[in-house]
Amino acid sequence: MPGIYQLSVDQLAAEANEIKSLALYEMNLSVILFLIGILGFVLNRKNIILMLISIEVMLLAVTLLVLVSCYSFDDILGQTYSIYIIAIAGADDFQFTANTFSVLSGSNQAFADSAKARFGTA
Image (tube, rainbow, N blue to C red; front, side):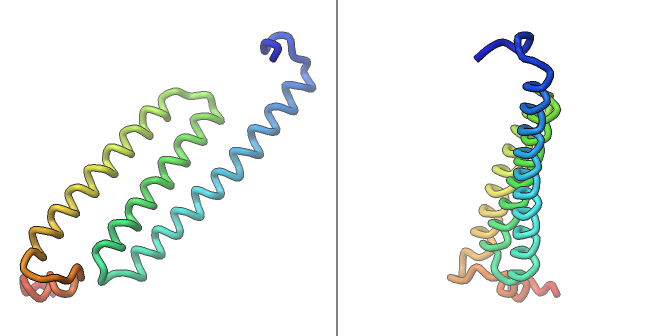
């Protein structure tokens, strides 16, 4: 592949348009994944495990959006932010899983209603 200085203006414009169209598809995918995560969180308010999975899908959609935009704008800082988002998502999963197991250790159900009834919160 020739270097960037050996390409003509038309070739550079075609390559830029290809990157923009690819980034547009990936951004649309990120928005769709985020909406699926929101719907999963709202529609499954009783099941804690599905709520955790929905939060994870939303965080991964945001990470995908950050990575696509940093690739489009040729920015290295976005990749660093995406690593932070992935670390926060992992810590979030660990915290919610530990809390779920500690709260529901006496029962075999993983529903938010049983935790509310156990502690008397409404």
